[in-house]
Image 1 (cartoon, rainbow, N blue to C red):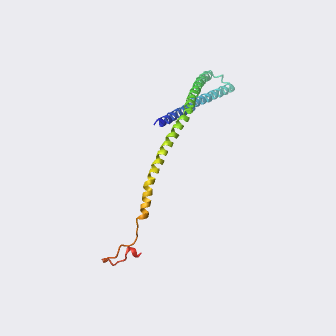
Image 2: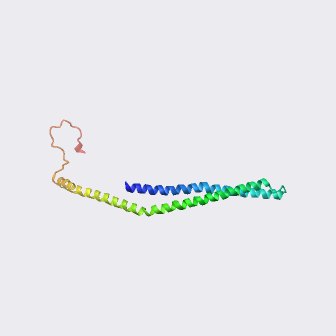
Image 3: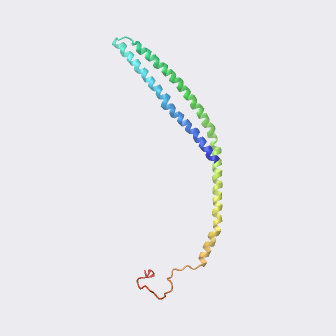
Amino acid sequence: SGILDNILFLLDVLQGVKDLVDRREKGVNKEHQLAFNKVQHLKKQKGNLAASGQGTGGGINERIEQQESLINNIGLRNNFSILCLHWEMKQVYTYLAHFGVIWTAFVNSQSSAHSELGTLWQSTRNFTNIMTSAQGTAPISCQPPAASAPSYNGPSFYDM
């Protein structure tokens, strides 16, 4: 029971790291890439407006600033998620070192259980010897029973 609890605890820690990495990849990294692409698109739009002589696009400048502010905010969130990953990995390394203790306890319990099972099989050896020696002294015959007045004249099983 204690071994299973320790293994399940280690599994929970590893699953927590996996979940955190998945959330980071799906969330912060994706948002950062989308915001960066939007800024690039707005800057391209601004360049197209300037090239066509329609002005600098004051509204576009404001949207570019908003997107850059969003990118900075996402960058801070990204840094925080990396810090969280760092602390989660420290926890994994702490409990991974404990795996040796868990494995040793598991090996000891399995060794003990198989030793007990071996002892049980050894104890059946006397019974097996008695059975095999009794078989050698008791005649086993496959001869048909002595013929008495047969009431059935059809083919016999022993005629085959």
